[in-house]
Amino acid sequence: MRLSRTPGPGLGLDFGTSNSLAARVDGEGLRPLPLEGGEVIMPTATYLDRDFKSTIGQAAIDAYIEDNRGRTVELIPEVIGKSSLLTQEGAAQSRAAPETLTQDVYGPAVEDAGLPGRLFRGLKRLLGDPETRRLMVFGQPYRLVALIVPVLLGIRRAMEAEGAVANMPLCVGHPVHFEGRHAHRDRTGLTRLEEACRYAGLPPITFYPEPLAATLAWLHRAEAGGQGTALTVDFGGGTLDLCVVRFADQAMDILSTAGAALGGDHLDQKLFETLLFPALGEGERWRRAGDEREIDTPFPFNRYAPFLLNWSIAYTLNQNQFRAPVMDLMARPEPSARKFRRLYSLITQNLAYETFAALREGKRQLSEKASVSMDLPELDLSLTLDRPRFEQLIAPELERFDAAVQEALDRAGLPPEAIDVVITTGGSSLIPAVQARLQLRFGDRLVSHDPFASVASGLALAAAQGLGTAPPR
Image (cartoon, rainbow, N blue to C red; front, side):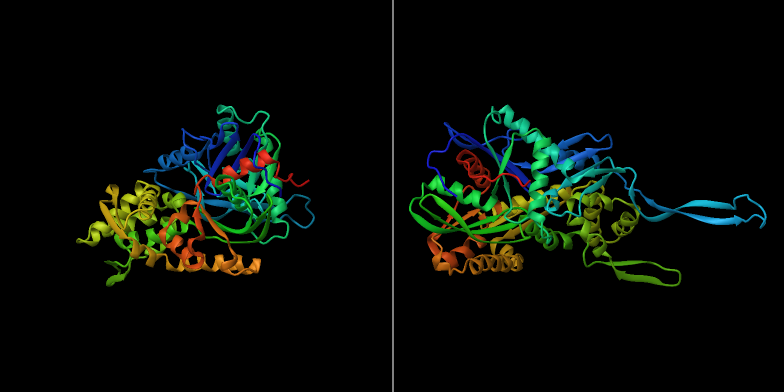
C-alpha cells in the first residue's frame, strides 16, 4: 500500500458497532464532520415505530427511552401454529368431509403488543453472518441491509450539508475480519455494507481496514518518515482490535491482527453489576405468607439482572410478574425497602440508560481523577469510586486485554522490543490501567492518537490517496 504525503480531497466513513463518524480531507486540512446536532459522534442506532417511520442516532435512543418510560408491558402469547380435532366422522359410504374443530396453538407469551417501536443497535456484528438475512419488525420481515440504510442515509445528508460527497472519493472502514466463524463472513459483510451504502445514495465506495486507517492517520499527523513497525490498539465501546503494521518507504503492510469481544460497554456492565446491584436489592431475603407457613427465600434478583445489564430491554421488567415482588418488599422495614424503591423507580421509569450514562461519565472522569462521585438523583443514590477499586473490578478484562496484545505479537512473530511505536485509539484506550499495561510492555514507545476520530480520519486519507479496495463482486 503506497502512501502519499500530499493527498487530494477525500471522505472517510467509520460505520461503527456502537458509534459512527465521518471525516474530510481537502485543501483546508483534515477534520471530522458533524453528523447529528453539531456532534461528530453519532450512535449507530435506528428506531422504527409502528408506522415504520425511522429515527436515527441519539434521537433514536432518546425516542425509544421516552416511549417506554412508565409504560406497563403486557406480553401476549404468540400463535405458533394450528391444530385440528376430529369432532364427527361421516358414514363409510358418505362423501361428506369429516367435521373438525380448528384452533390456534399458542406458544409462550413473548409478543409485546403495546411496544411503540423497535430499536436496533450493533447490527454491524451481524453483517458477516450469511444465515442472518432478515429480522421481524412488527410482523414484517426486514432485510438486515434495510435496517442500516437509515443511518447511512442520515450520514449522507450530514455530509451534503457540509458541502461534501459531490465529486469526492469515499472510503468506508471495515474490521479486518467480521464477527462470526463462517468461512465467507468477510465477503458477506463487505457485500452487504456496500449494498446499504448504495441504497443510501452514497457515491461509489472503496473499503479500507479500520486498524490500518488509524495507523495511516497517525503517520499523516506525525509526519513519520523512514521505516518501522507499529502496533495499533483500537479499544472502543464494543470491541478491541489490534493490528501489527510495517511501514517503509511510504508503503504499509499488515503483519498480523488480533481482537476480542471486549470494550467499554463490558466495563460499564461490570460497574453496574458491582456498584448498583447491592443497592437495588441483590442479596436481600423475601419473606411472605404461604398456605401453611411463612416462606423465606432469597429475592430472585437473578431474574432481573440480565434485563438491568442491557438497557435496551430493561423496560420489559415493567410487567406485573416483576413489579409485584418488588412492591411487596417496598413495604418492608428499612433499609431494604429503600433498595426496592430504587429498583421500582428504575423499572417503571425506564432509567437504565441514564444510569449507564452516569457510570460511563464516572469512568471517563477516572482517567483524569483519582476518585469520582456519581450522583443518581432519580434513584436517590450517590456512588463513590476510586481508581484502585475500579482497576480491581476490571482485572479480568485487563487480563483479556493483555492476552489479545500478546496474540497480535505472536501472530506477527515479533517480541515487544521489535515494535517501534504503539498507537492507541478508541475511548477505552484512555483508561490509565490500559495505558499502564502497555507502558509496562513497550515503555515510552506508546502514543495516544485522536482516540475517537482517528479511524475516520485515516479513511479520508485512504480515499484521497486511492488506497481503498473495490467492493467484492
